[in-house]
Amino acid sequence: MAFARFIAQIIRLRAHFPDYAIKKVRLDNAGEFTSAAFNDFCMSVGIDVEHPVPHVHTQNGMAESLIKRLQLIARPLILRTKFPITVWGHAILHAGALVQVRPSAYNEFSPIQLAFGNIAKYIHLRVFGCAVYIPIAPPQRSKMGPQRRLGIYVGYSSPSIIRYLEPATGDMFTARFADSHFDENEFPALGGGLRESPNDITWCTHSLAYLDPPFNQR
Image (cartoon, rainbow, N blue to C red; front, side, top):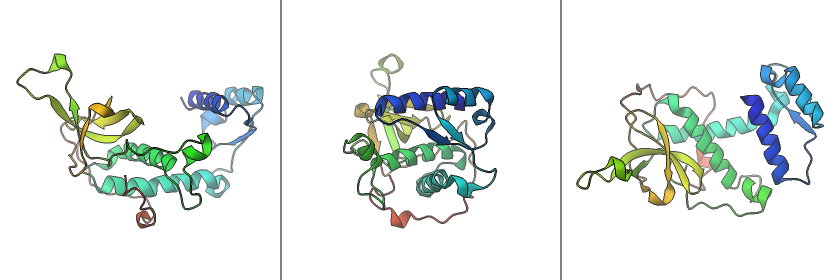
């Protein structure tokens, strides 16, 4: 799966940036990145592959720095909700989306603006974990019954499509942003099919949320 995603990313980058050749990549020592098939593919497209020394994270400093930044953003997102830590992946994905659209302390432009030249749009951003009311499809509703159902907002696939969790089961679905009603002061809890776990995070780093205020932890 990781090999296929890598190839897809290479194709996507070449399509977006045809004037910039990918000459070298640095990856960890996972088996999918050290296989003969992977090395043969990279050699065929002219990409040199570098692998750091095992367990020496300083040799992959840029990736480790980004991982830490995502953790620092994702942790307060989880703590303000009623989510169990078992769904931390949604917070990491949302943190990654936020990193793409907002400036940093090192540059006044967002990564999206630097890469594509387009000013990032924020109108579709909502508070992570807030309540969202999704229209019930006409075949599944009655004239006198509820017209919407409760969901928990966990990010977006595109500015026009949101991702939300069904509170009873924790299953993820998508919905049209324009059809969704948000209540950013309400944070529903997951229940039903998901067992609540203690809201305790073991990441060994202190939050720097107070240094990153632009979007109120969205």
